[in-house]
Image (tube, rainbow, N blue to C red; front, side, top):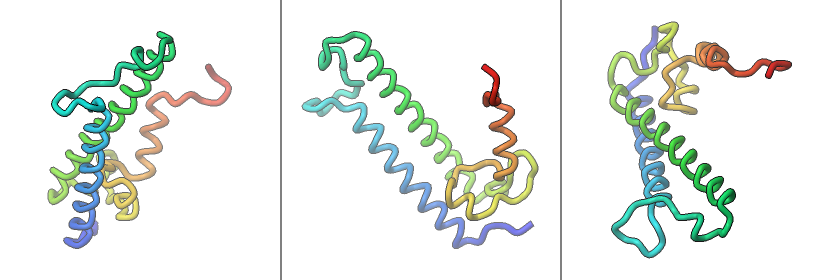
Length: 131
C-alpha cells in the first residue's frame, strides 16, 4: 500500500483548515441577529412573516442547514485529527487506500468510492418502484 506523501497531507490539511474556517464563519453568521453583537440565536421568522406555517418552514430549513454544516465541520475536525496518523486515507470498510483524488474532493472521506456507494445503498435509499 502506498501512503500519502508529506506534501499531499499538507495540502489536504490546508484544505481542511480552509473549509473548517469557512464553515465556522457561516455558522456564526447564521446565528447572529442584525444589530446584536453579543447574542447568538436563530432568526425569529414569525416576527418577519405573519404566517405561522411559512415561519416554521423557514426555521426548519435554517436548522437543517445548520445541522448539515455542523456535521461537515465535525467530520473535518475528525479528519484533521487523524491526518498524520496511519489510518488517514485508508478505507474504514475494505482497508484499501482511498485515492488522493477522492480525498482532494472530500478530505473527510473515510471510505473509498466503492465502499461509500455500498454504504449509501445499505442506508435505506429507496429503490425505484417502491414507496
